[in-house]
Image (cartoon, rainbow, N blue to C red):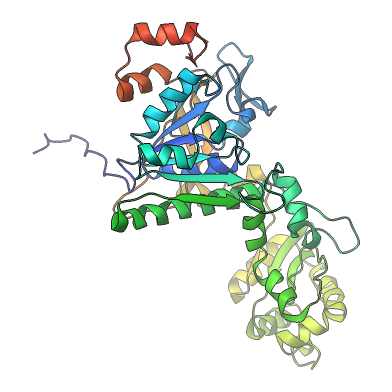
Length: 421
């Protein structure tokens, strides 16, 4: 029994005992492996000595150090790498390749986002590593996949948002195509990667074998077209850009109040009727042009200016309070400072503060994980690692290397550590 007042040991996490080798960088792969780390997996991030993940240099902003000077840890890098260990390993060197093969032989999952064929030249592709470890689940993330005429093209989130059609749907009707404000193609691809890895783990329970997952940014972005894409496949029409308006629900967009804009997201005829009564125009719900959602969609050009005129007479706070009372979906358009100051965000632990060794404050603020488990809760993670922070610890733990051997490998340029680059 625990002594009185002793803290209970943390509950096991969903993926405790799973080892993941993370050879990915930028955002899609790191997003996937950070999620696996949050769920309890041991994630070993393989980075280039002296350089590391490209995003370490993608700033400002950078984390401020104890001396008041920017560190090498950019906010971009910090956003997708918590809970991991960093092993700085030169996989262009045959000795580095041998070390990676030895670790892969003891791992459950490997995630990489090299161009198709690059790792095969080093004997680090799925075919090579699966002979050493038939249980290995090997997830390859690339711009356009391992097959097809574009397989060798480099893929970037912005390019894929354009090429896969998202930008043709995003932006005002009379303005240019627009990308999303975050790297949504990368993020969604990372989510698909995590789902695919978990599915492959379940399949391994039955077969005893791992498998290769071939995942493309382009494919993930095409999948994200959902209702807009299927609408085109259904009627052959090319959907126009509608700004914040919805293609098949009206009124559903941003509207101007007396002191700013707010979101109105009316999803059914009852909500519409209650809203227009509150707005002082009850006849709109009886007008055959607007009585049903289908009618409102067909007559949006006539309705939207009428709604806009009605909303301009009252304040944003007034409209939000009225809509809440009437059970009509409406909400504010928050800036990020308002988001992270929100009591709801705080209650849901979506702002995470973790210890950090070089931060001026000794901590770093990150975004929390949205998954809330009843029996395998997510424990506070480790901060994103410094480059090579865990090289010696990983090699000692997994390969039995002593400090003298690690020092020799540093001198030979095979590995780097935070103390000996």
